Length: 507
Image 1: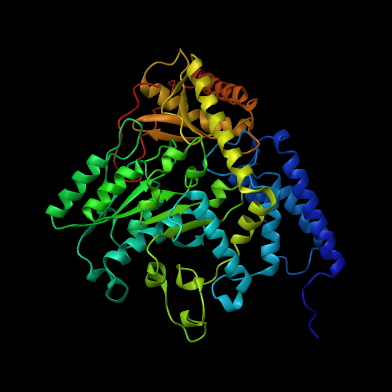
Image 2: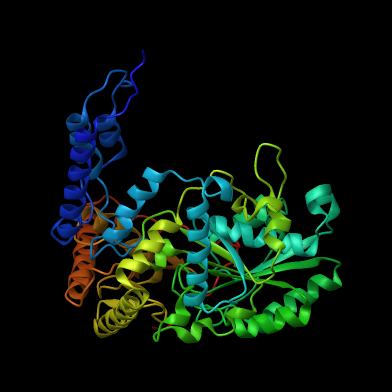
């Protein structure tokens, strides 16, 4: 008789206690650890992890020891108070353990009959997200893996609304079409246009103002120019909280242009989608309810772990019109609500549980108040940058994001400053005191600090600036001894929409 490959109950309890102890210790000591392992390289980690397929059991203790030493130890500590790169938050403990509970239930939230409670929990969580976002309360939605998939769904909704026959006839049912983005749009919106089969040539780059927000007047001009050429304006992709600077496109004004011209408006609120609930950012969400579709990422905004995104549309029935399909081996729409008809996935994990438990355990108000504190902290950091004679702020601080650069007096010229700020980021990351990302603002190389960890405090701000100084000085010292002096500055990478913005002239 074959023995089921499961641990006995006592071993399962031991495993659970070990995991609980690890999580508690890990979260409690994050601030005391370096942000990153300075010795972590691809070659070292590959050698550390490499082993033959384990055909025989190695046991719980050996497996967990390898996890601690080979995986956890060299991992970047995303929850560290001075991890300010990209948009990766520190998950709350309740959300961490919610993942284990969801995994134990192992609900595929696709058909109601197979996951009744999980389905209704997701529907409830979606209503809670609507309440926090200020988007149309009657909207329909679905949880996704994140903003990239949510933006793809939003663009597919725009295509379905304009050309409902496309599901049957394909792209041959469509005339030439265009999608309008600013240079600050997240690259996933461009990928969405490509994945729809329209090609990057369908993307129109709409200029921005000095605060890096899409200009409604330029949008109107671009739409009308395409109409005169016989090209159908398919969708506008506005952003509520851009990745580089946290800028908020003027959604109300853009919505007015879209209504006037008959164009679908999709708002990417992956990062700033809950601005309506924040006293520090509510003005950013003005006009959001007029958008045709809208995305928000709880794994950015609610301190829950990956993956958790969401997409909504105020056009009820459009999601199942876009994704619904009949199958003899599955319950269909007439047999009840089925999430499989609301998005591209059939196998869907129970993402809603970590959102549900986080809001139940901690309360939405506490989460929103934490975001307001982080926004004020970012503003304070911007003031410190302004007060320093060796730093320059490059954009307004918005939604907790500060774009700046290191400008020591001994470095002159834009090319040298770009090369310095490009080179110091990997040095900073390796030193372990702080972890920033970099971006381009036009032709200017920028450092980017995203205040997204609830552990970050006022005390971390001067330490962050000093860590950047130390990394910058290390780069300069290396240059002084290098043959030929400073390296050639890196070529500016193209923006997602392949159009450049002017470099910032003042702070």
